[in-house]
Length: 355
Image 1: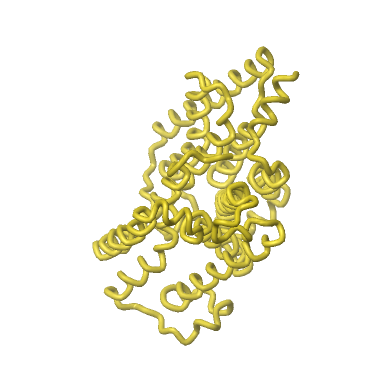
Image 2: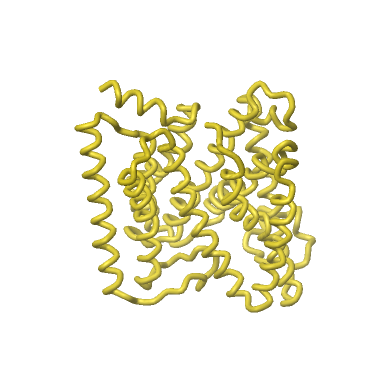
């Protein structure tokens, strides 16, 4: 079993404890909590204020700002890719204003599908990261890619083709929903066949070649469980939000910290090296929550007025109802999120990631 051990060790990023707790086990444990406390979660028809402050502000919006540590806060990184980091938010803002002026739903629909693409690509990215040292023969790479996309795409397809989901991505109606039972049935059997093919291939590799990539397969398993439970198996806003936000946001923040710690180890040249030391973790997280609080305070005061009890500091700001003002304010407030989505498609490719 020597080769299994060698493969097992080489797949890790270098922070095994953090990877177990904050990347690999997060979707599995979150899914298990939904199953164990099924009665509670099914009786919660919506995300109440406490869950909202924990999940939306504490995890979802906070994880968006963690990209800053990988980009704008790192002077060396920013200077090396100044054009990308300067023009991306400007272009995004212009496009968002255009879409909002066409129609608010055009804006929210584009934002929703961009978010879905980002969430799907993150799972693929984690899978590729943990399989970087595997032999990249055609069948192995093809099956791994196919299964990770299948486990996240099928629930999204189900959502689109099976009307009746009681939750939305951002706002009601942001997805194009239509009943297509025949197509959905075909997709389901295709989904099962992909899972079976990958399982048989992995079993064969494990038995006959004594190779098993534990972290990569946990990424695939966690993605399959959390996406299926959150969208298909249950039909509740809190369940969907919990699994969607936690399984995406916490691993992303953990990856930023692990990457930063490795890049900045013993470095005195980079502007934020201190932030990636263990003693600075409270500051690392605290800044993210602060940014998220300010953003959500502005959203609540200027647009939604959903949670004024949390944002008294912003209560003096007037709620905006004029369509022209909203066509500027809403894209501006969404800019950190959209910039995060777009930059994330580039930052891990700017140069070979040293992990």
